[in-house]
Length: 197
Image (cartoon, rainbow, N blue to C red; front, side, top):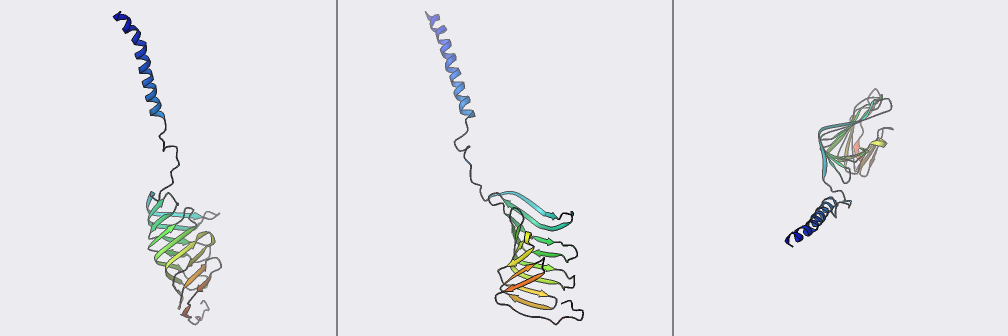
């Protein structure tokens, strides 16, 4: 009778062990409750770069724009990157190079808008009959696709010997037109003998 009990319990113990292993496998492979949910992206850095440089080429393969920075920190939620000591340079055939710099900056995900802050400066070298131009402000926004640099902050503009101040500015690098807004003041120097002013 004792042997009858053990032989009848073996299938029962085997079934219980099989059920236990099956339950454990089910729990181990089942996704956790929060795994299937799409979590919103956090404003946390997802990559860094030191001595960063990126160039945009024109159809002929020549450099059209170059963005450099001592440091770049990219954020995953809005695709914006923070920059330390950024410099944005525009190269156009047969035209002077235009360089925009700042202490810090931000660039959007597709590098179409670059904001420069703190000691922001634009320099267009002399050339094409124009003297050197320099503009200083606390903020400049470079609209890369439009080849426009603008600011809504007070700006000081020096073009050759002429010096102007204003409450805001818009510079179109294609048409080479500078617009000053707000409280505009300054002194325009007489044209030099070559008429390059």
